[in-house]
Image 1: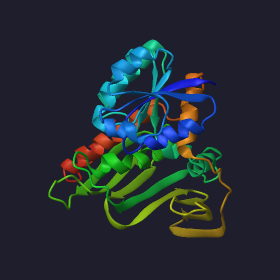
Image 2 (image 1 turned 60 degrees about the horizontal axis):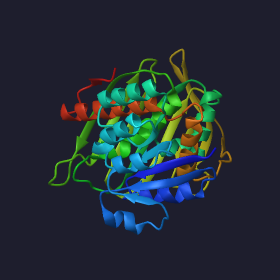
Image 3 (image 1 turned 180 degrees about the horizontal axis):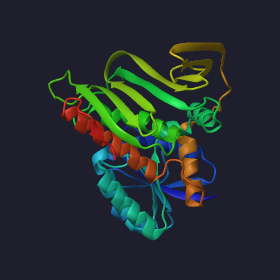
Image 4 (image 1 turned 60 degrees about the vertical axis):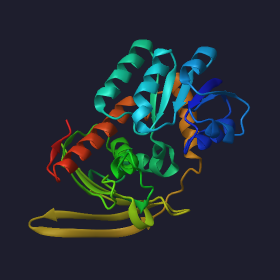
Length: 328
């Protein structure tokens, strides 16, 4: 694997991407693009710098994949240019502003046999990989419910709301874990506590075709940072606390059953499995390079579109004051 990459966007997330490309064996950064000269000059790199994507793509025919780390509203047009130039693309979450844009990008990629990957970074953490292993091995039994809380103070944004900012993490983890289950409807309520009016707190409930359900709480309006996820199965339950430096995953041998009008509660041991300790962004970029060589993508455009559809349904339901909205 010797992949030559380009990066568009050197702002908030860009420096982390640059650092991880530099660490990665078998990949090199050939160009950086940003319309802000100060953002480009802040990075200590020996690579080509550009203020526009077209020039970079034209002058670097050797580049196979481009990473887009720009505001959400720019994702579609930038990714479209990259794909039309014959390069694969890794897009920061969420993939686009709507599902129709996802379809356009997917059609272009399919026609040119190119890779679209969405940077749902939590899927590349040791904790979420362990959760997926527990689900796929049926260690938890039949999945029943997921409850997630992702709250902190800020960062308040002028051109977006808390759903676009934080919920993609939870929607991507949810969609990754539960596989092919189909969401039937979603209900969400949100509120704003600033003059701008963008929702900074939201509560989201999703009901699936097999009875599985999920509840997600996201907020920019909390004095403490919480990153908790609970996944309940018929045999066991698991708690994922991303704030803990260790023992992020706790598996509880607990369950509840109902028979002959009686609830039966079972309680056993708690176990903390060993997790892989790798940097998620590095693993993500490595996977992107591997996907360009033919490996199946765990964060491809299909999952990216699922996340976008859930975000769209959430915002529509919030606009209708919590009225259930069809996700199909």
